[in-house]
Length: 331
Image (cartoon, rainbow, N blue to C red; front, side):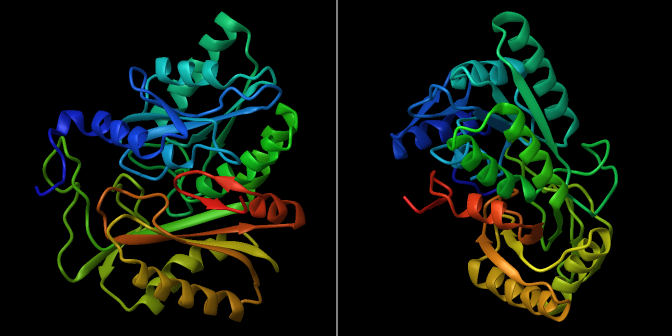
């Protein structure tokens, strides 16, 4: 195992220490492993909290800042944060308008965020709403979930909902918007290689040199099928066809081609071109795009595609200013 780390047991703590030094505009609670927006809590604003296992950077800590998340909890690699972390994050961003928890549909995340919300309500009376992201069309259930996994739509949802909270919208309206975005998004991923969790020291799964996995999850969960390596044109078809079969998309979508951590940007743009061609043939116009490694799986080579059906409101919120380590525009 070749990794730029000191000790597998210290990876998350060391990374958060580096993040705090690199981004002094953020505030890192090292004891609870929570990344806060530097000016949190913002009085009168709904606080937006997310989090999950580490190893998916910049998801979630890299999306903390103006126009996106107010706090993110960092669990161990591919392991849910614990309720105490989520409770600290929630209390730390409460500006009097309530807090929204954005939770990817993984069993540990669901359970721990629920416990944290109950603790917060009992101890401080903070109003907490929750939205669960479950956009992966690859499988109905997986190693980590009951129902669909939460994947790429999470990035788009955090940006859009963060912009709405920045406008001063009330909690119920922000939560309803989050649920609408989740319903409007679908994703599908693939892998050319596995990844290696530092504490394990060996690849999560094995793929032959001439094989790829279609429909993987962000923790290396198995997908729909294992097939021979194919050109990007065919890979794009394998990812887009299940998405378009699962939900009707019309004119005006946000198209997100995500890298899993080990895929160079040149290859992601090749995939994006093929995805765009398929959508054009299907009569679906791309209104906005995002290409890059925003929700990764350590050093896994591969990609995912997310389509989000957008209207004028969602596009306006997508275009709103955002200032985070991972996304930044309009500021």
